[in-house]
Length: 217
Length: 217
Image 1: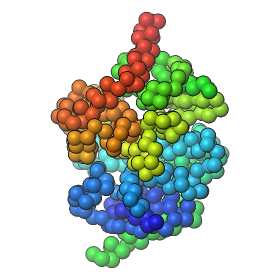
Image 2: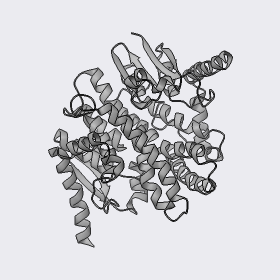
Image 3: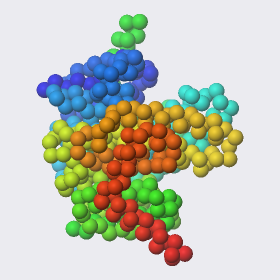
Image 4: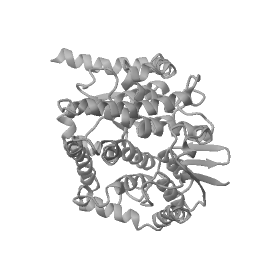
């Protein structure tokens, strides 16, 4: 079985590991599966060949023999369900870990992503600063709730799981901001994820793609 | 086994079936599982008893004997994995249906939800109209891509699945808007979901809660 994923040929995050290939790489590293990467440009992503794999013209895609998947959450779940290391063995505990995967993507990420991306089209608008404070308040609300739940635990629910992988991936978008740093337990939680050997290998691999691109040009 | 979910005692959508208990009700109806509903007020949702079940103070929660879940996507997936009717039998086809569940929540819903909720805090701002056109463009981009992929098919990938349930639940937020109605195949897709007997039972059940509340007050 050969696993091939797609990633940005030139990631707009400049190798900070915020692109959506990162959680997939991290999950593959956690379970010890080798994979290949096909680099796609922004032009490639609009082509019918890519849209056949990913109807929204995004990365990553995941190809495994005849199976084609997209959406990083679905890909991580597929990996986690088939290989040990990312979900508990007990059926109920598994369902709870999956709950955290959905919470990361559906509840915690939207206000964070909105805050991050709003700067691009709105930056020159006179009202951007005013809206930034509304967006910060929405992010802060979610972080305070998450911080309360995490408390002094290492991970969200027992052992490290795909739920933590997803949540840490979302929180990393706030690295270096006071929004995150004022919650000491959340900052420590993110750092705990980032020190996992599998995370480090995944991070280095995506950074290498970005740096190779820089050397090409 | 008794299944208990929580729902708004007084849904802000006034019974239009846009609250997050709706996909859970619909999934339970599709697989034919009976369930009970505990109605919670906005005050209840801030109480420790509710936060212990749902750390973000939202609905729905799902209780099944000792198992407690939250996040409508995770609950629907849990139901779909255990009872026939919402996921194909073939393992690869299942993974693809799950991909559509994540696409609905992580890719299609965020711009739609942002557009819907921005009106509340921003309505009085002079820049709200200007921003509305930016938000409409983001929604339109996603809908055009989804419309292209759906084409003339009845459902996103073969038979009706939890992926369609999730996607139709998201698209229903745009019912009555030109954003949706200009895509004839997406409008027909939503209508196709809404005519399923399980949808109708779920819709009637959540509407009954809203109407009972109106009679109480």
